Length: 359
Ligand code: PEP
Ligand code: MN
Image (cartoon, rainbow, N blue to C red; front, side, top):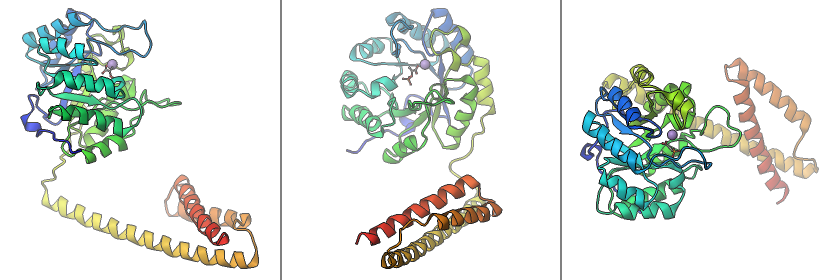
């Protein structure tokens, strides 16, 4: 199924490299919303976010204000001129949010996992061509993420962006949700042209990590950043340790290094091309050497079979392993890399010899 996404230039929001989406995790009061938005309005084309209905993992946490908070979003829009976005998780949310002229909707990670909910929201949005941003599902399943985007596209929505907010993992200490960067990269390959937004707040769970994750996203040519920003983060009713205040947001944005993705400099382009050609050649050489090494391993396998000796000769492997590691380290390769490389090569040799033994 092919997915049609409108050119970024035809969206009602501006992806001015990067698009900044900021505002509190949750709308808590009219005053909190207005104070935050008034601090944020100096940023060009900022999209103001606030959660109205909060999907909480455990009950008895703050679950959002509901419709009253939509009114505050409307007031923010009228007083500051900022465009607004909120999360919708069912058809009723869509109907109410449409009444308050919210500019962009987003789908939360706990909704993307549920095709019934996604379909219900898609049906409620049919005919509106509202821009919609789809967060990755909690679990690292790229097809669920794709599937949600396809459901919106299938009802005629063509302004769809993806938000990378990380993935749940057990035993994960540094991040609240591990990034697994290869998944958003793959999504972008599968859906060329889809705007990709990074949500460092939900990836990190910790305001001190937001800058580094944002810089990495920018370096990977993301189109936007969604950073939870609260006038007084420590008092926030949800996600308080990952929210920043408007000054901290300024700091983060001012320090980001924005690099060019389209490289205009011809000299740079041609030297890059040359280096890439070298890498291609070297990789081919590496593969060729590996192929030759495996052929020799197979010959050894034939000898072993004839003499009736075991495939694994521990003493020889021990010797080989430590001498190769020494050589590698002398050449500036890390011991850890050498060890992984040698084990992988050794395993492949054993597999080939096993095949010969069992012939
Ligand atoms: C949020 O953006 O506040 C939110 C609930 O995000 P997620 O769905 O990524 O957990
Ligand atoms: Mn949040």
